[in-house]
Image (tube, rainbow, N blue to C red; front, side):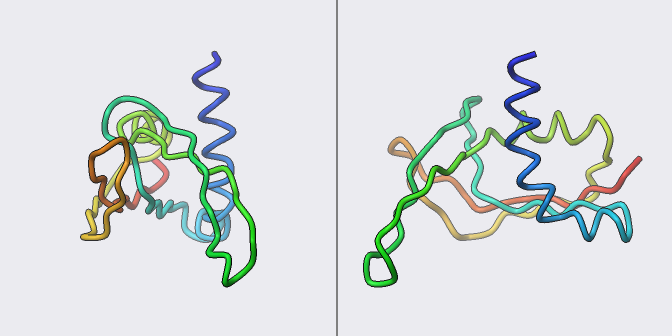
Length: 103
C-alpha cells in the first residue's frame, strides 16, 4: 500500500500537467528523467542563483515502476528516449517518456 500511495502522490503532480490532454482525448504524455535501477530517488534541484536563490525537492522515479502503474489504466503506444542526460549516482540517465491512451 505504501508503494501505491507514494506513486499516487508523485504521479498526481505529473498527471495534473497532463489534465487538459486527458480530459480532451484520454491521452497521457509523460516525459522526464527516470531512474533505471529499480529505485526512486529524491534529489534537490537547485535554481541558478543568478535567477533567484532557491532549491526544490525533485523525485526521479523508476521508469519501470511508473509504467507498471500507468499500464493498469492506459496502453503505452509510443516510447521516446532523448539525447539529454543527467548524472545520477555516477551513471547517466536519459530524458525519456511515453504516450499512453486510456484503455
